[in-house]
Amino acid sequence: MTRRLPRPALLLALALSACSVGPDFRTPDPPATKTYTSEKEILTSEQRSALGQHITTEWGGLFASVPLNALISQAFSDNYDIAAARETLVQAEASVKAQSGSLMPQASLDALAGRQKYGVALFGPSNFFIPPFTYYEAGPSLSWTLDLFGGGQRRVERQQALADYQSHELDAMYVVLSGNVVSQAIALATVKAEIATLQRILAADEKTLVLVQASFEAGAATRMDILEAQSRLMADRALLPPLKQRSSLSYHTLSVLVGKAPADWSPPDLDFDHLTLPETLPLSLPSELVRKRPDILAAEANLHAASATVGVATANLYPSLTLSADMFQEALTPTRLFYGISNAWALAGGLSVPIFNGGTLSAEKREAEHAYLAALAEYRQTVVRSFSQVADALAALAHDAEMLDALKATAATTRASLDLAQKSYEAGNTGLLQIEAARRAFAQAELHLVEVRSQHCLDATQLFVALGGSPKM
Image 1: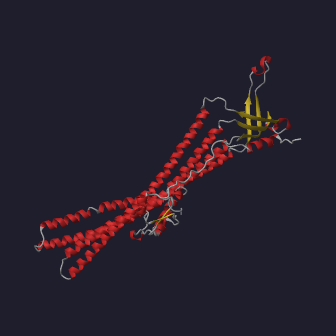
Image 2: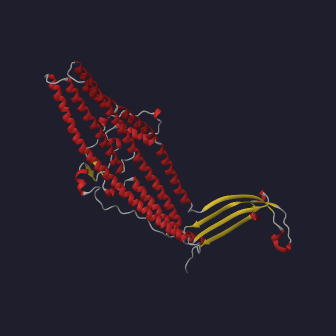
Image 3: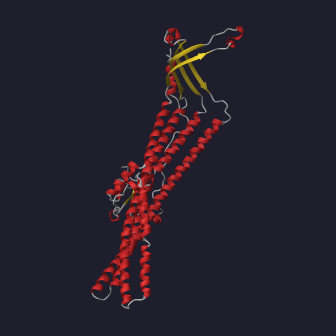
């Protein structure tokens, strides 16, 4: 004789063995591409990058700057956008727990007091009259909606995917924030170096003007020479206010990034000459980038949530079963509540089977399926865009390297010209005017070199951001 399970055990076994309808999410395959640029570009743009290596150090470590590390740490701890994103993540994680709890049996302890009067029609033509009365009820109640087809589990899966999305969005904010801090710090240090260089150019301009005026008084120069020297001095002086404005903007932007008002914060002293990059830059493989870059992972989590929504919509097409139980005391006075005669109970099982709903449930399932396809397209677009951003940064770095080589040669030439002019002056072959002209040319070459070095650092920063950034500090 076959032994049968008790009914409660049978229902529990039925609930635990429920199947989950809808698609099981699978991470999209990584792209087959091996490089970020074409074969022609690889020869130039990737020659100074180590393909397959990861960023294993902090941002400031890549630039060999302790103050920069401290600045990024301050931004991570005090930036209000980051603080808001952290709270949003905690909110999403709490939603996962709340959704998971809804799958469990729900129990509550209820108490009720009321005043009731029935009409004479309650008992039909008997004309029986019940006077108004007060009643009291107290006791526990239990309800449980069985997850027969996995719709509840799919809801939990969707909520977990949304929490993962928020987690990856927070990681992306860390990457973007650190990139912005580094960029603004580089800009601030660059302007400081440019102002110092421009001051040397102005000093040369002023000395040149004095020399030209002396030559004019001695009859060796013309009035046109004086006007030309004055014009050069005024033009160079006009370059100073925009540099000071850039310095103020970078300073104010940095203060916002670290969560401070400009009047309440001062930036660290960053020396542009101390911002150095490694000779070889790390470069993740494209197949590794899709498993590392936060915005790609966020798009994948969004795709996972869309997949789970398809499962929820599919489960809604199937029957649902809800069990409920109530055990309570009923009495007309509070003192009689806990007598045995006051016991009351109710057991119920409710089955709901969709039969006709005007096509709503089927339409919701199609809606979820197309939302999944849209999320898949957005994921693939995010991957393609990330590869393009890495390729852009690599190309920019290659062009920066070419420009740096050219300007270093120019600076070396103007330096040699200055040395030659000084030696010629010491030999009595040239005057001070030629030395100042050579000194000005050398300072201008240095100014251009600072600008290109700064752009090189900024483009390297963009590469690190495009590669998903460094580990969070």
